[in-house]
Image (cartoon, rainbow, N blue to C red; front, side):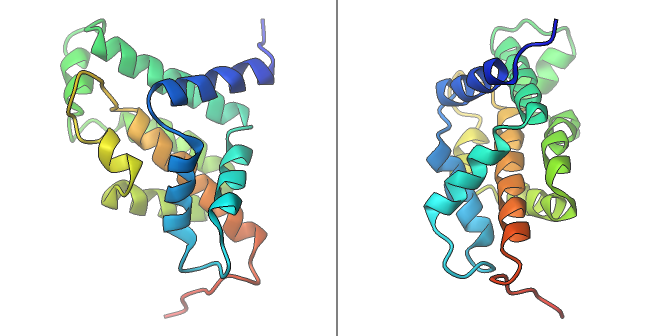
Amino acid sequence: MVLENKTLEDKARELLSERGVSLQDIGELVLFLQKDYIEGITLDMCIESVNAVLSKREVHNTILTGIQLDILAEENSLLHPLQEIVKDDEGLYGIDEILALSIVNVYGSIGFTNYGYIDKVKPGILKELNSHEGPRVHTFLDDIVGAIAASAASRLAHQHPSKSHYITQ
């Protein structure tokens, strides 16, 4: 049985909201990534691009999978030693980033650089999700949100090449 795209999208958006991530939060990350490169960019443009990214089936699948793994880790339902690795967001565990790259792949190579940068500096909601404070586990979610933002930023860059200021040095 193949689920309808709308069903997956609705559930993915619901899970993001339940985990404390809003469209505005992700839009602000996109603005952070593109404000120096696209003249006249607005938060509304960024949110529109986030919505476009969230319409992709690959993105739905990644959100559903990653958040489910985070929830299982919160419930101590993963097998040892994976339980400890995911719950602690172990630094050498890179599967969370690999899963997030399935989102970045949708919008081309600029998405990889955007993702690497935002994953390193962790602005806005990413800092909160990565804080490891409280009962929630966000090992996968912080990378997924960063990948959505990176993809939305890449989408905007591709849509507005005449507005972009490219660094040539």
